[in-house]
Structures are given as C-alpha cells and as structure tokens.
Length: 77
Figure 1 (cartoon, rainbow, N blue to C red):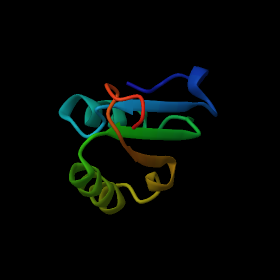
Figure 2: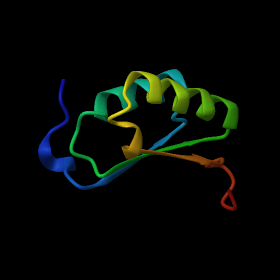
Figure 3: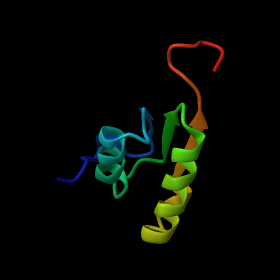
Figure 4: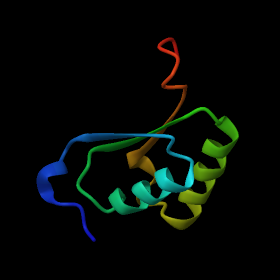
C-alpha cells in the first residue's frame, strides 16, 4: 500500500520508531513524498542499528530519515 499525496513535503515523526510497529510504519512511508521522517525513541543503540540497516538496504532513502533520542514521557527530552 502506497501513502497518498496528502503527505507530500510534510514531516512525519514516528514515536517508538525503532520498535516493531515503528519499523513497519517507517517501511510503509519510505517511498512516499514526505520531506522527512523523524524516528523518535529512547534506545540509541537500536537507532544506530536501524540507521546502518537503512543505509545498507535503502541508501537512497537514508537522507530522508532523521533520528532523535528522547522519551515522550519527559518534556525535556
């Protein structure tokens, strides 16, 4: 299933982006016309693993994905 044009040039933030659901959401939107996809999660190691996997499997999409470490339960993160 392809994401529609309603997301063109927009930014998507996926909270819990390194988990199984977040990874699935990322894969769904990689080929969309989103300007940027932000992965927001607490686990820096999982983010690093995901970044390396993305570079190996989808290098053309890697520039679109940005990683942020934080916790939605903590406003300071």
